[in-house]
Image (cartoon, rainbow, N blue to C red; front, top):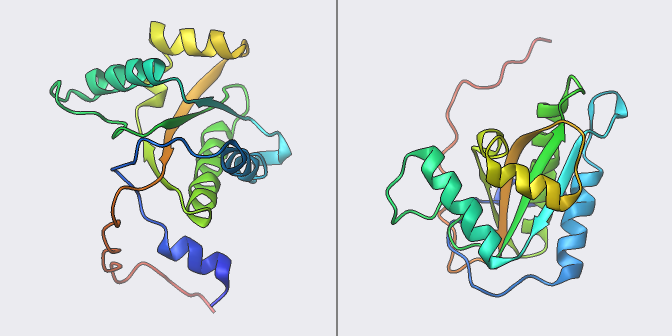
Length: 175
């Protein structure tokens, strides 16, 4: 099988991480994969905020927990040492799809490099809060953007669960 397709098939969401920070070169490669994801009309609407500051990650995780309605014992970022916030230019009609494709590319790139990742939802709501707006300000993002996802990233702790059996009747060929 083609190694790129094999990588996509073997990738799993990781929800337990070692505390070690990935190498900057690995993060650069993952971001590069996001930058080269397809975008509607080639408008390149996604923006990426790479966060490795533990205090800021904790604030974002806590806000995400509150939005999700979970008890205080839950860490929606699963202790990941790096969070990549994916936001996209609201004025581009395909911005949500563009950001989702970029996040998917980055997840596949992370797996190819031996890193674990997981898409974490609620970025839209989080970037509407004072904490989210502060992150955008710190990053120097001034255009109107929508939060698309948080991509948590790090070295996996343990082996990921096996892939669930694929549901039947999901492909239709019209020859």
